[in-house]
Length: 155
Image (cartoon, rainbow, N blue to C red; front, top):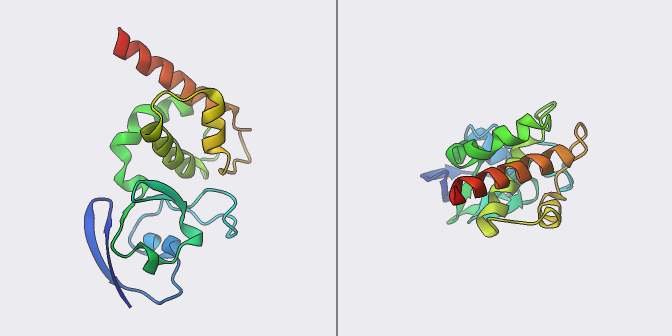
């Protein structure tokens, strides 16, 4: 079947099998930040934004994205650039495998709630599996970024 969607701001038309996962479709389109992890929709590695809402691309058929906007980390580099250094400074990117999912969910969180509490950050990132860092580094990095941003705005 043929699908048309917008991927990272660009129109895409492609032929896909009815059972093609959005994860596989995106990787075929060169979006290698979208990772295959657990294949059970439990780890968050395959998180993308579908019409601005984070979804697990391993549990969405590519055909379901037809007519919609899909954003991957490749299309959000500029938006992510400001805060990813703060996460890295906390040693929260030890192996780096989970980072794209964390970054995608952080972007969605900050779009929805520019100044979240620590509990709101934890709740938003709860679906991301990280075996290296224990999650506190990501929380500290996001908190440091928010403190920096607030100082920059009020300074």
